[in-house]
Length: 154
Length: 247
Image (cartoon, rainbow over all chains, first blue to last red):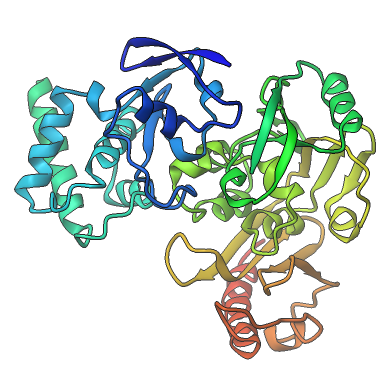
């Protein structure tokens, strides 16, 4: 079937199988930041934002994304750079495989929680697995990014 | 799971007819389990256009549409705490944004957090053709006639709690339990590792060991039968301390 997808404000007409998952379609369209990990919704590596909700693209049928706004890290630009810098400064940007989905998850979380507590951050991001670091650095980086973001908005 | 075509019904009648007319079709709710099943079907009947995603807060009940996501349940302040807490440890926010209450209930998963909570909360299920069935009867039933779950109804309860133990924050539970109180007390125990069950007429004067003596536990890869029972006794003892403070 042919569907139309809005990815990072770019409109794509694309042929997909009925049971094709969004992860495969996005990679086919060149959005290679969206990675395949467990492929069973467990690791969070494939997460994208759809209409400001965090979604595991490995288990989200492509046709269901028609008419919705899909956001990957390629579409975040300045935010992605700032979050990336915060992660790097805390030494948690190691193999980098989980970083694109983590950046999208942080961005999506901050759409839903203006000023999340430590508990809310941990609870929201617990589904995004990282096997390089111990998560404490992530938490420090996110809090630092939140401060920078607040300062920038003053 | 692979399927050749998608059917997008816009009414329950249309969805039901598609289901009964093709025995190699399946109902598609959130889709979280598509990748975990190894089978081929002709068509998937997508329920997402049937307006079954809602939480209605009524004076004496809550009505939850079958396509309501676990995340919607988690963040809806009015719902009983046992129900909200039961979904909080299910993998991550992303999964909970797609997994639905209907898919979770109809799967009758033995590890289910949600079913344990709904059982304690005295939930009724409303099917398109069979009408209202209690969750207790649904879990016992071996009826395989095709039907579509439309909504779940739970009465308002005065107080409730949910507790579970798992090896990691987001893992399947080794054991879980939920307690609710209205004019009577209901205690359910799940992930035994069999499907959740109720403790009949719980007497708060009994010890947790005595309350659990007729509940069966078994071993699996996650925990042994003896360990599960010991864990359940300890968890119930802690839970009952809180229950005794309820007015």
